[in-house]
Image 1 (cartoon, one colour):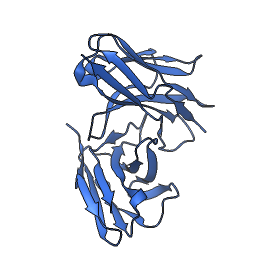
Image 2 (cartoon, chains in turn red, orange):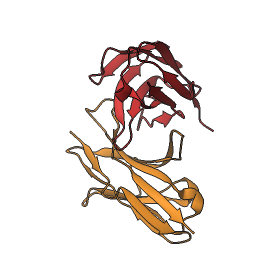
Image 3 (tube, rainbow over the protein chains, first blue to last red):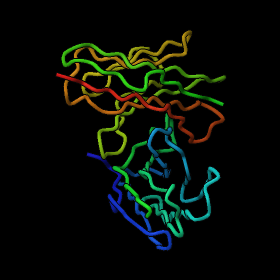
Length: 113
Length: 115
């Protein structure tokens, strides 16, 4: 059973829509991450939040806007996306000690029409 | 900067046969090493990790991996695979110092177990 949940699991949106992805972790962790997984490409780290503060933005286009209101919740706000943004978006969390092992949610499969 | 190479994009194997999925890494500093598995339409699940100590690490579902510092490798093995092991396997590395939270992944190996 995963301690990281993501909603929705599937999302289809038009290029002019605005939608949000939600991630919640029940592990008491203090770091959260957004990754993009496209077919035939390595996982791409998008954003990192430590103690609710963004510590990494991996040159992500501004049409992706993250929000971390507390250590348990992470959002990814989407607007005016492109078809090439279609992918599996994975959320992960970790405890910022030791090996800092990341635990992943099931992902949101996003299709942009 | 660190990098991870998974040489095999696909590995077909018959059920009950042994399997080895290869992972090599490059880093100028000490690292932690991880293997994750991704079943179809799911997220990544941690299989096992090497932090320190014994170089042979045992994980879930009968998998194990051996850290070889001189070869900079962390190959994943299972002595007898099952149909349910069909999935994509990712090797990942995290540097002990100076890398922040960053986890660097390989491109993945698709394990296909056949009857």
